Image (tube, rainbow, N blue to C red; front, side, top):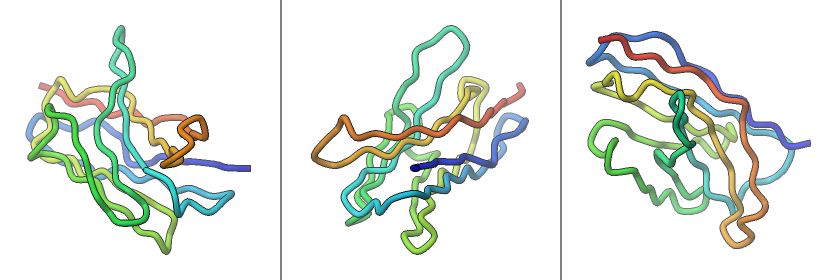
Length: 119
C-alpha cells in the first residue's frame, strides 16, 4: 500500500521559513514526478512545485518562484519544500503528490499539513 506522509507545517510569522517533508513508501518511484500542492480555505487545490524523481528537474508556480525550493532524497524516498520569506497568502493546507511520469492516472496524495502565516 502506497503511503505519503507530510510533516513540518506549523504557524509562522510573515517573512519566516519552513521546511516541509513528504515521506513515501509502498512502491518504487523511479518514473514519478513528486510535487507539492496547496489549498487555502474557499479555494481550489493548486500547484506549488514539482521535481522529477529521475533527473531532479524542477518546476514552480510563479507565485513561489525565488522563495520556495523543492528537493528530493532518493535514498530516503522523501522530498522537501523549503519555504522562505513566507507571506500570509501562503497560508494553506499543503499536500504532497506523487504522479507517474507517463501514466498520470497513477497518482498518490498525502493527507496534508497545515501552514499558517501570521501577519
